Length: 248
Image 1: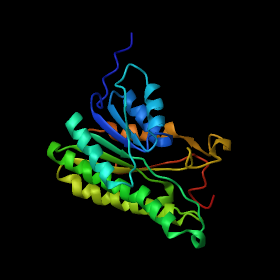
Image 2: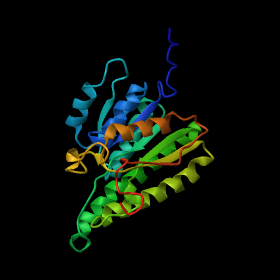
Image 3: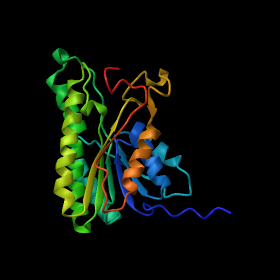
């Protein structure tokens, strides 16, 4: 007779996942809810969030769908005020909102550049800033940023995406220092080729060349499940045949 499964360390805790209407964000929301967390799913597409939330198994707390544009500071401040009023705390923030861009440098407009920076960098900063305000009095909390292998090895015609992911890696390290005295752990996951809406055409690749979003979510759950005194600062997860190491 097998021993009963130990309850998850995440049971009953509160998590906010941005960009959770699809892809890695949606997979993280599903996986974290499966660990017994109360998940707030935030993204611009409220109808998509509500449809996803209704699909979650009834054995776990039903995720809350919240419409949010991470480029809008006022909306972010309002969301965190809502979390404070409704839940009284925040245990985990996953900054997953973002988008990839493959515009050649000579064709990249300032407006497009600004939109990439606002979504991939300024949004995570604003969410982390507001999360700190909730987590500091708690003397605990965790923030996990979704980076990219593009923060380690760049690709052609992706200057906006690459620049913001390199900067997000630096932001992670700065936040980890700033939160250390208050028990706040900050880390980053760098996914390789993943089948999401960000990367059209990935569905045609074999499994050893492109991962599922659920594979990345497993890493996020691992990081989130560590004891409060332990931080896995960064993790790189990629398909075994992705030409990342060496010359490919």
